[in-house]
Length: 284
Image 1 (cartoon, rainbow, N blue to C red):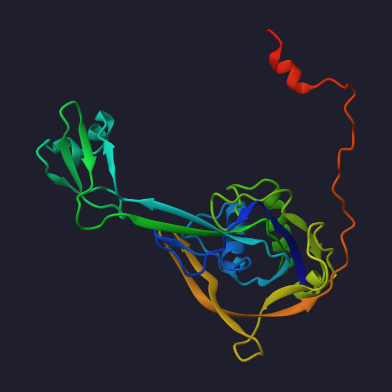
Image 2 (image 1 turned 180 degrees about the vertical axis):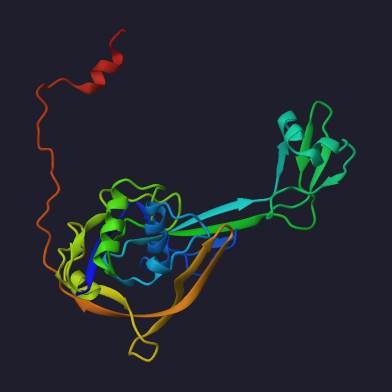
């Protein structure tokens, strides 16, 4: 009988990249990717980059959208302007150490930067970017804000139990797609004896889930109705290189039972009628 491990993926921000893997643009999918969730499990298990992940990639995968969240855009710029050239920079960078204050062009170590010119300002040296050539490099990163998902991994119960135990004491910190997106609360919900789709249909919805029908995304054959291609089936994780196979998924509506959990609200009333602002004017 197929077993399914249920995971709760919730946090202030999530980012499940599919297409943008460069410095300048990082996208996010509308819901967790198989590659991202496989990476979470591999991190908890302590699997190193380059190690075999075929046993994790072979697990069935489905995700339920309890709360889609909102799209958050983080816009940054890099590679322009003038900045002081510190002595520490010259010691750390042999190229800068050899540069003279005569306007010689020195390439930066950053792949997205432009060549810098060392200039003598009289009282100090500065590293300025030239007026022509590569100037400001815009960097855009996208996140899902305040989203909630429930993921089901289907496969051998013993393997699923090993993964569940690893989340209790992870070797590496699991993240929701990117390193700056830690999960909130417990990740593991439990293991049930059913397929991933049935498990998501029967599992209680999150206390902050949307009302009405929820959407479940599950792997399907290329020719099935509504099939959409996504390159998120992991083949190998290596430092600086991730290889993905093409996977097809489609969506279906489910009506899971309401949550029995409720948020606790502190309704305690203040015991005094003192104005807290008055204390700011009291002498120490």
